[in-house]
Amino acid sequence: MATVQAGAEAPYLDVADPAFVINSDEVHEARERSWYARTSYGIAVLRYEEMKSLLRDPRLRQGSAAWPRHNGVTEGPFAEWWSHVLLNKEGQDHARLRRLVNPAFSPRLISALTPRFKALANELIDAFHDSGRCEFVSQFAEPYAARVIAQLLGLPEAEWKKIADWSATVGLALGVTLKQDLPQIEAALEGLYGYADELIADRRENPGDDFVSRLVFAQTREDRLSHEELRIMVVLLIFGGMDTTRNQLGLALEMFMKHPEQWRILAERPELGSAAVEEVMRVNPTVTWVTREAVEDFEFQGLHIEQGTTVHLFSESAGTDPRAVPDGGFDITAERPPHFGFGGGTHHCLGHFIARCDMSEALPILARRLREPRIDGETEWLPRSGNTGPVKLPVAFDRGE
Image (cartoon, rainbow, N blue to C red; front, side):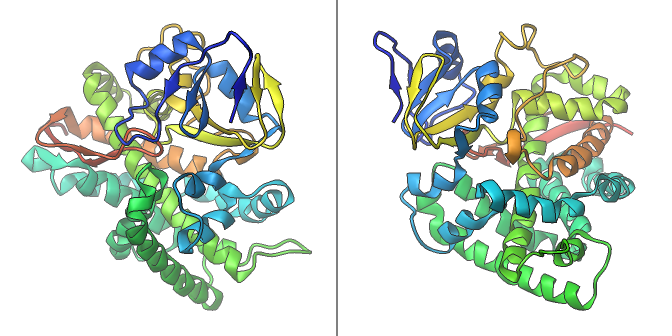
């Protein structure tokens, strides 16, 4: 646990409570009192410059590895998989895996798929456009995210629902209800593992120009991915690419419905698609905190941080910190400092280019065709901490072109 110099008092945030809201007035008021808060897990960093600095501090390691343990999960299939994913590797192991898989994340390969992303967005919208309403998650965000991943990995797009359901269930592990959801999480993980094994076997026999083929044959002169590393990586790619994009698209629509003038601007200026993605991720990211763990005792801005302390870096709180963004309202035309929605440092998200590319194609098309979107029924949300997003988002809209 972190200790504070005598006389200093930091606010306390109960982030383990499922009712905790990370973008609440409570958090923003805490940010004005202190650059950090005490939490039920360790400390939370609330301001931009401190988050920017600590993301790259060598005295901190990736902290997500401890997440299952924080929630009372110390063994079993999920704990085993989680301990071996790239996200939770460090040092030479981490560098080796990134070096081997980096070629699969070629911007050229992804950019070549942008016409298909556009066609997919229009196809999905066509299915509900005439009705003037949709359930945005199930009718657009989820199939779009899943079918993009299917295209990248060379999977049959007709199987999108199966992998989407598995991925959404595994995604529950990133919320504060992990322990109670564990049985269904592990069943979904088993499904993804079986699917990955079949996929890897097929690509060994029938290689193509897709992500999985590139991973199967990823190697240097001295090294290559083992079968176990391959299946862990494929499961992570399916889950990570689907779950976060689905959530982030829903959060984007939520943000634009609160700022309809920005939606109109995006409809008229589709070239702002990339800027829209960056602005949404600054103020309403699905990854609401980035986790680190202290590998040694050290001092930071008057705070003594002990080895083993969990440090949650709050993405939205830092992204909307008025010290970094004085005119911090939601504005897709404004110049902004870099956000932290994809993490940072050596653990910066490998798939950031994929997410940026597919969302920047989808959002302008949605803005052009779904005019004046508004809530049209009962919504349902994941907890507003950990990884968040809508489960159900029914909307009505005026029909655009």
